Image (spheres, each protein chain N blue to C red):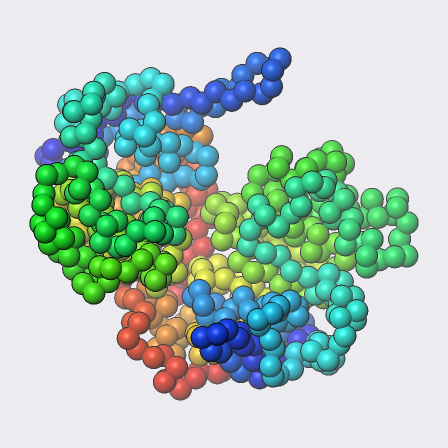
Length: 287
Length: 263
């Protein structure tokens, strides 16, 4: 069963210099309870894809074509009010920068509570408080009752990212979009955050759209992988197939450009993505 | 046995943080008594999490910060005691490549001026000679000579990092401190810059002190690795030995946390 189906999505940005086709006709599906990873370099359109799903594209950008079916309903046909109801309740998002995406002048508890205040109006104050404490516990924050009253500056990067996840998960969304959630974190903290997200997915059955440029992380978390290059999908496959048998030349180049301890000979020349090659000229590998 | 470039003994750097008017100042032990050697022509990596003191160590070696205690011997001479002229000489021999290629280049300067600045300040070369040297350096780092008159904003992250590398090479240094030189770059660009750094090392017989938190990069480029944790060295070993046979608990934890692709 697919939770989300994206069909021929095109998001363009307009400027005096012409049109920049950030996302140029991509289609993929996100099954229920599974993790789909979008990988690609900066400028490949992976973040724009996630912002398009949330309908957060602003002027001078525009979604010019396509469909984003969420449980069969086209998100692009909803009005702003209807879309606001979906954001945060059915689909929520975590951003890369845990340092800047929390409001410094409100307590952590208040910021998690905000999502509940907006989307779960049947709960009273006390019930919401208990729910916030529960979600803080769920993301592994110790002393949640104390932390409720603290401000973001007192927390480390990893803890802030946990709070961001708590906010995103507070309303138990059907889908979580995570845009490079671990890039700004240390490896050991990254491992914890990834474990946490996998764990939450198992408990709540959430679908996960995970955007990253780190293929090591993809290997750990993905069920399906979508490889993007210059606004297009060049390869789409299950994680198992992709790592075992990458078919598109761009995917191969990307995989070979990272040194793998124990496999890549030390100090050997690494393969690079050749800028003079137009990888779009190769046939797409969609499995 | 190869020559020893640095001999670092019991190096300490404490920062004092005022907690408020009536409270006692808090002391942060950023680097808390570390000792190690750096051999000529090797790549010595310092790894650890943020806050472990790896960047502070780099700052101490570059003499951007003065240590609280301890010695840094550079070819047997304690650099913490160097004065004006000697210090200037030392600074020519040790250069740095920064992490962020976006904020470490002056946006108002052309590429030629950026790479030529160390030459203008530290040598009495003529303008013509400086230009010649800059063009030579640009060729070495794989940049087109036509780009001499361009501004940094006209380049991508990887190209900017090349500008930073050319600038670091300008004075023919012996040691280059690379402070997370590839962590702001895309994987494919990261590979290009790593290849370039290894090529340049061979050609100019450089010693690298490589600071990073990315263990797969470190494994690829290093000869020896220093693992730091809260201001202390927990392990210092040859790269093979460290990856195959980690001793300290923290190293084990760090190694198991790297997301590795296995086939």
